[in-house]
Image (tube, rainbow, N blue to C red):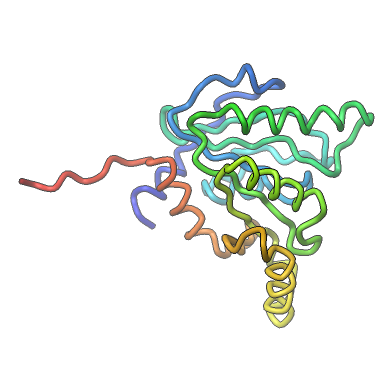
Length: 206
């Protein structure tokens, strides 16, 4: 693992906010969105190799806040509220979309959005709506299919083909991972480290 990726292990919880207007500014950041039980928090923990960095709620949909994790000063990983399985009143559920969209539309330092999808559920209607919205807003994004350990090796290739077929026309930028088993994480770690520019480039002698 290179030096850039190792810096992800230094991540710490920086702040939790209920309103995107209160978050403040970063120098560079990436954001994670997805259904409430897609495993966003577990994925952040796995990427940073920290078991208890991001708190995964025992009740999917309970978290309604924006959680910021600082890798280095001004370099953030941001966990946005889950959608599609929210617990609470219809009004509370409806408030999540403006929070997520408001955040993503007002981040000058946002480098990429990672849409986390559960391999079993596949890209749901809400996931596809989010992906289409990101594309229309010209916001760079990648899809991360999580929990691939839940599918047998024999069935995984077929499941991949099914998901790729659903996402055809939306994106071909897909990462296949298991945050529980640490499968497929390194390419994602390298991308995040590069996007956040977590280490200074080496100086070439003149």
